Image (cartoon, rainbow, N blue to C red; front, side, top):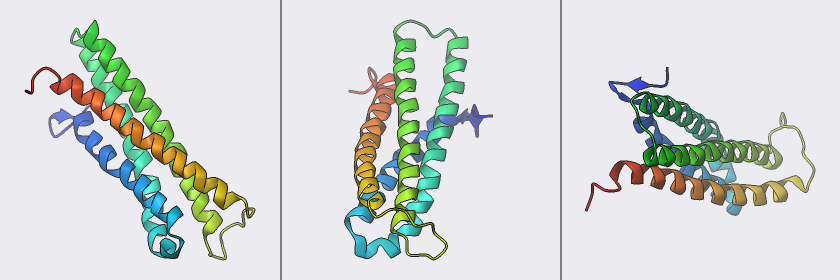
Length: 161
């Protein structure tokens, strides 16, 4: 299911969505935290990204595992397999950080929302969630870079000068 799209490995296509949506989630979530007067304009976009970013990260992990299994079946071993495993580990961590960020962002939206249907969270929740958004956002950006760099290094490392 997660192996091919349009005759290409799905992984090489979907990673581009991760590289766009995860940093965009971080950027808009930090704007939501830092610019309270714009929250009403940002809340739906932040919520949409909090749903889309972890989904793209999960699909990327699943498609990466399918590609990894295919490469092992083709005889990949040794140093290249070590690099693939390192890349996969970065991707797994990125997914969990992105999922944590998304959940934290949704809780922050609830804590700061003014809608009658939203549950009321304690007054300390918004500042604590804001700090968590900052920390998880930085971690997500670091792992987007580590994951992307390790993948690009495997593909382009010795071929581009």
